[in-house]
Length: 171
Image (cartoon, rainbow, N blue to C red; front, side, top):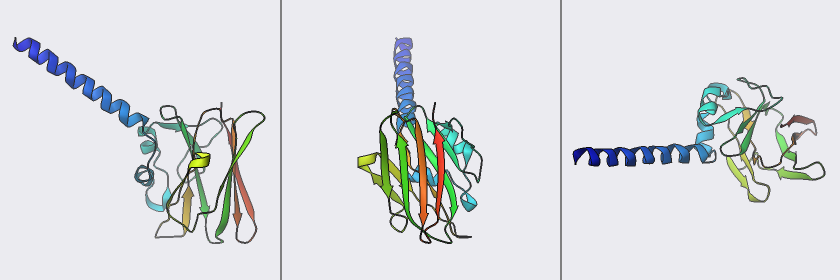
């Protein structure tokens, strides 16, 4: 009798544990999760990214203090991390991504002076902004569902009119 009760309790415990692990691995990255990925001077904490299920994307350099693209197979999201100095300021940011060979989608974001967390429902785009007390810098992380995305490009247009771009692709 005791063995049956213990075995049922063990089965319930195991099912509950599996449910919790699946639930935590399939949730999208929140702003608080995003903040935890960075430490002093906005260096990316790669081990924390990996614990959240993100891995380095194809053709990307994934190292601390560098631009990098990561993808999460479980949540079907990718995270683009960009380090730029804001001494000039940035007026607008354009994010372009190729959904198929013929269709180009564009997400226009103009919110660097706004809130820290922006979600653009129309384009499934998240924008995070972080800043440090030691020097003015920010890290932008648009997150897109992977779906059929083949290519992306991000262009900064500074207040001075200067443009900078970051490009990348996926398998």
